[in-house]
Length: 305
Ligand SMILES: Nc1nc2c(ncn2[C@@H]2O[C@H](COP(=O)(O)OP(=O)(O)OP(=O)(O)O)[C@@H](O)[C@H]2O)c(=O)[nH]1
Ligand SMILES: [Mg+2]
Image 1: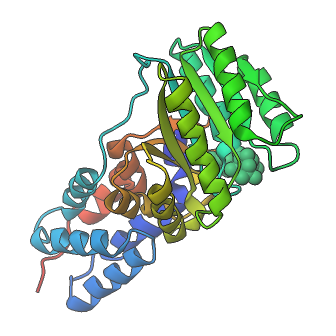
Image 2 (image 1 turned 60 degrees about the horizontal axis):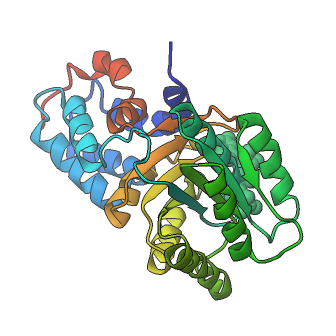
């Protein structure tokens, strides 16, 4: 049976795997290599990754290079990620630009950590978007976890404060904080994130705090640029790439890791609670290249001139 990830990557795969398929059964010429390079560049893999793929193809043109390309791509990515119970109570700040999938992902994360035996509190700290709290309440109910919100304040730091007090009395060991969407250029909102960090450091030193940036894969290179800017204001500990199911831009994971050097932890593959996959570089690359399907086409590739 095909995995959700494999299905989600189908559009990305049809761009990237097709680029390699176009070499099948043909003599490899400088022109066909150029065409491969162009197609890969169009698939959001980023210049550096594409150049390194071209090196692999040229060096292994006499053998079945697709597997070598696969191994190379895996080596470019972060380790695979497996959520494990936190040793100390940990706050996961869910941050990112508007509409990237933060609220949905906060709920999905709550479910994942609940499933591995953690006691989870969700904190609804988006005071900017009408209905943000209701949206999280619905998700919180579905997950069946503790949720803290306060419709009467527009001060996210105060909601965080109350949430952490409540999480302590609830013995929660994972606290997931949904925050308002923001661009790095909104200096007051970026300062607000810094203020939330200060509250934790000064008043709740027993909690570890980590930020996860939620990135919409549809935005391609723009999401990497935005994340880089975010990283100048808040230390990013991990990335979650969402909406992989609707995009052909799955190649973006390479420039994301190369430029940000933060591990991808999860992949969003749909709108439901269960549509969050742990990031595994081998599965991801297999999904992009459709390796098994390609083997038959590529094993008899002609030699370089
Ligand atoms: N197909 C798909 N849709 C997703 C995924 N993650 C989120 N969405 C959808 O993206 C839309 C926006 O999601 P939200 O979770 O509200 O995004 P947000 O970042 O909280 O938005 P703001 O709070 O307005 O900044 C919703 O329609 C979600 O169902 C995903 O992995 N796949
Ligand atoms: Mg939201």
